[in-house]
Image 1 (tube, rainbow, N blue to C red):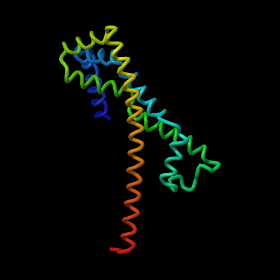
Image 2 (cartoon, rainbow, N blue to C red; image 1 turned 90 degrees about the horizontal axis):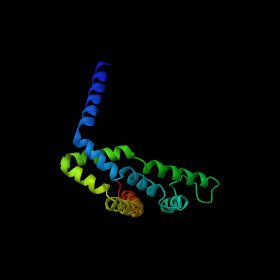
Image 3 (cartoon, one colour; image 1 turned 135 degrees about the vertical axis):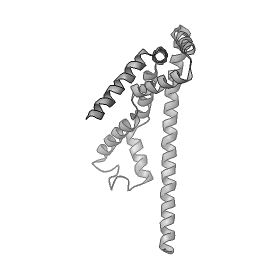
Image 4 (spheres, one colour; image 1 turned 45 degrees about the horizontal axis):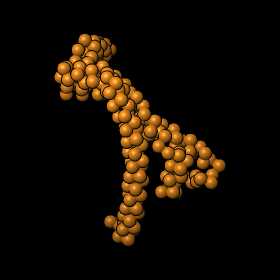
Length: 179
């Protein structure tokens, strides 16, 4: 119990020290101006909305008919499969939280940039041109997220199919020559 109390006190002192650190404060200001939380949320939304859940569930079924334990698109339970797939997307897309994402940026910026660089970058991002650049960057980030998730989904499906095919080949070899 005493160790836990000491750990809590140390954590609080680190937080208080970070709040007093002008470089961390400048990094936080820059991260706020870069709208990292909005970029993050748009990426999560792009992940969740990356397609028709029913079509995605059907693709999983078609890639491996045993994947849903005998349930098929013609089953009365299929709508529940689609709902569960939607929940899977929501959970898998939201693994990292916006605040944690912002803190990663703050730490990296504070480590890699000088105080002067942080302040100059924040001043630039505060201008109308900086804000227009950030809006365009957010839009590009959203489109990139959509493309990445679609590509990842295709790559995972292909890799899974190759894996299943390879295992089937291995099983046949084992059946022909058990050892």
